[in-house]
Every structure is written in C-alpha cells, then in structure tokens.
Length: 405
Image 1 (cartoon, one colour):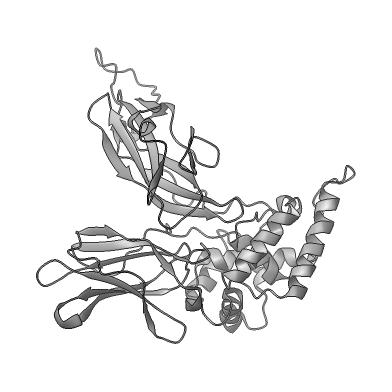
Image 2 (cartoon, rainbow, N blue to C red):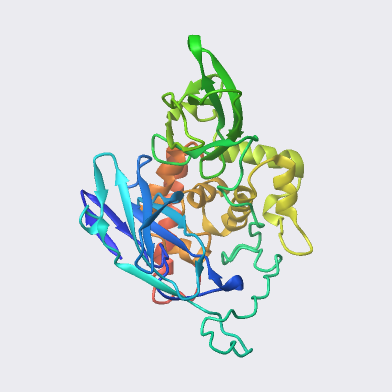
C-alpha cells in the first residue's frame, strides 16, 4: 500500500515495511499479535504515525507508532506499531497515517478509509476440533528455544552481534509517570550515547531533577518518575562534552502520565573524539595486544558479550567494529571507514558491500563524518572511494565469480 500527498510519501506491506494482510494464524491462546511497519519520506523528527483500525466493522481505534529506524542513504524513516491481540475469527481493517506540522499522508479523505485488512485464523492442529465449535482453540504452540536464532544472519561476519535488548526497551527510574522519545542531531542522525536529564519546573524558576539516562544506539530515551504533588511541568536537558547542560525542550506544562517527546540536539553537543576512536580506545584497554577482529560469538565463546559488558558499549556497535576489522585487510579500506559505512546503514555482507554504488558510499561516509562517528579527512575519503570503485568494477564484471574483496 502506498500513498502520496502534501509532498509526503507513506507505504507499508512491502519487503522493507512488512504489514499483515490476508490470513494471520493465531498462536497460543487462540490469539494473534501483529505489528505494522510504516515507511515515511521525507524523514523528520516532527513526523508522527498512527495506525487506525477497526475490528469486525465496529468503532475505530488508534495505535501510535514509534520510530524504529532511519535509512540515511534512501532518506526513509521507519515506524513500528504493535497492535493489540486479536481473537480467531476477527477481521481487522486498518490504514496508516503520517503527520507533520501542516500536512499529512494519505489525504484527509483517504485517511477515513480502511484499504488494508487481515483475518485471524486458528493454528493447524492434529487434534479434532470440539463438536459444533469451528473456532476451537488449537493446542498451544511450543515455546521457542530462547537460545535459537541468537546469532546474527549477516553473511560474511563471523563475529556476529549477540542478542541485544530491544533498542526501545530500557526505562530509567521508577514511578507512575513516564516520558520517552528520540533525540536526533540536526543532520537527522540519532543522538547516540547522549546523557539526558528530566526536570520538573516550579515556582520561582526552580528546577527539580526527576531522572536521567543515556540515549541508546537509536537516540531513544525513557525515564519513569514520581512527583510529590500536583502535575509536573517537564523540561528535557542534555549534557554536552564539557559537562554543561543544554535545554532541548520547551516546558511541557501539566504533563500527562505518559508523554512522548522527540527532540533535536545541536551538532555542537557531539563528543570531542569521534565514536569509533572512543570505542577503539575503550576496547584496547580491555584487550591489550589482542585484536578485536579475532573475536567470536557462539555457544562456546562469547567474546563480544564480554567486551560489551566490560566497556559499557552497546554490543551491536562492538560487533560492527569487529566485522570492520575482519573485512579491512581485503577491502582496501580502513576498519574505521568500514565502521562508518556500517553505522550509516550499508550492508555488512562483503558481496553486497562490493556492489554498492559509489554515490551511496560517498553519501554514507559524509553522514558518518558529519555525525562524528568517524574522523573523515580528504585522504581517507579518497582511499575509500577508490577502493569502492575498484570493488564495484570487479563485482560487476562478467568474469567475477565471487566477492571482489
């Protein structure tokens, strides 16, 4: 499904933005839980997405979607909306709507329709259904082995990322109230690893700190808190490289119990040293003369998990650095350049990477440099572009039988 309106584009039900359609099989408990992924262009921190649905033609309901990914190369923003559990026999009609200040997609008229739908059907069962009960529940499905599928499916990377907690799953603090959201830099990249604080503004310009957290790899923050009386007036601040607080939000007066607030941070907030340099230095302190490229992550050896735990870095970033180190000798690019390409969203598969267009490599390097992920000088950029051109030419040659790396 695809819509274009008000200079915005939205789509779902595609390979990059999967969404349910047709028959959806219930799992245990005679229920089905589904998620709708929605892609939006152009990306913006002010974008919001809702999935509007109805069950068996009844009154409509709405679920707010959350940002889950940003494709820097193609300039696409992805949202995810987990719908509630539905019962066998129910038909669900739905549509996704994206809004930005002063515009939306699809059009207001189309947004009142339900062009997509799915039906919840029972799971196959070897036991006969109860007489006269066409929707009798099938036996509960066997619980998945939590150790299965833990390894990354990225081809060509022997040091795959260990299972990591959901990027939006960590909340700091305790209390009946919560605020969450995403922080992006002015260039649109996630503000990773930013110290974020929540304050309650009061009489006489007073400010009481309610909690703090460090943003995750997607720039996500979530803080639970409590107030002694009245309703809170919330203000979000971040800490720059010099320890100075920078206020990102206007005061949210009379805040509700659950608030979501996406914010933009200035580029000056970036740490002085690039991300790759800081990550490499912290890893070197733990490994000494050993090399990260030799790391393994399997049932018998959990090197990446140990390094991530020891350094405090996200295990996924450690895995990207390990993969970059493995591919560097044969790629003609430095491990730092490869790390920047991976962080910008290019494939970890060496065959796919070798076939990446020169323009995409240049755009990815520019984004990684501007976001202070890597230190990109003219010499490094020229070397990366030269290696990419040679790899692309070799990979596209009719005589090429495999990776050009």
